[in-house]
Length: 242
Image (tube, rainbow, N blue to C red; front, side, top):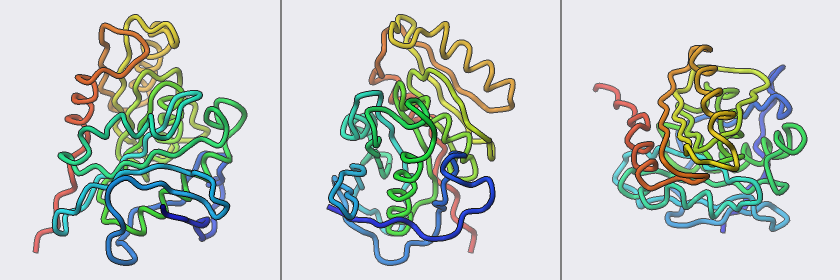
């Protein structure tokens, strides 16, 4: 179990939780790498903030950190399971926050509590592990939230993975993360015609590089879609030449 406190540092104008802005940034770890394996992250009061999975280190090689967001009524464990089968081979440090309410704040009310929670959790991992890429993804409501936060924090996240999203509603945008979207053609929860088939052209019209995959299926994330998404992920950054 890891216990973390709120990250410090002032916010700039327009960088409030209500704007979806995160303060976390990639930086050199403050100390030696932390624990590996499955980790439960708890706040000072003992409440579960997130679950994470950290592969064993491979020398000084950095990780790609992937934030995974669950669907409505789901759990952090369910989100973690999306990419857990490929985490070791791909050196993916997975962090799955638990929403404060049954779904994410933007969907149930307004941005704020979940933005703060995600910021707290990510700061702990950014301080404790070597990371050269940060990505965000999710399923269903989690995919909509990942798109909204990812586009608002394109200076933090290199890419966004959206499995069966309903919408994207960033209060503001920063940077140009690349985007992967998948959706089942028989999805009855978030019908594809009203969701991704409208969303993807709009994102492309706004200048985002979007890879889009439809599949024969419902409201789910098939294994072959996970594999395609992982193959698509931006590679590790090239090390500087000596």
